[in-house]
Image (cartoon, rainbow, N blue to C red; front, top):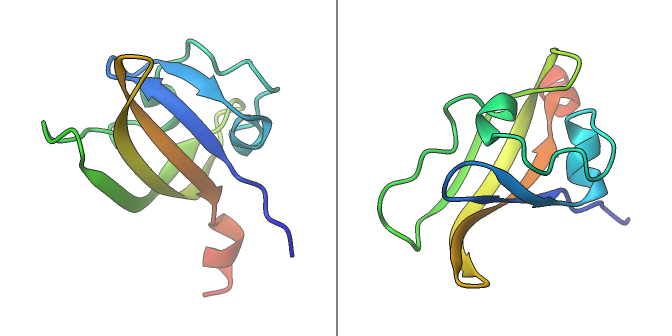
Length: 102
């Protein structure tokens, strides 16, 4: 069974600098439309990291879609350096349907 990878990348300033189409569709956006959006608009208050540049985080939270609705998302995030800039790379999966059956 194939799965789609939902990946996004944001700068240390919390602005999305890269996303694939699966990540964008998770939040109801067309591919490319998330570039420049603050992560707080999608994940209010949840992407705060400590000062440790190698910290990894995995957690569930509510994600806010373009239409204003919310869904439970699972996030695995890590800080790293990309092109000389510290960024947070996150894989995001909508788990709201799974939560309904638990």
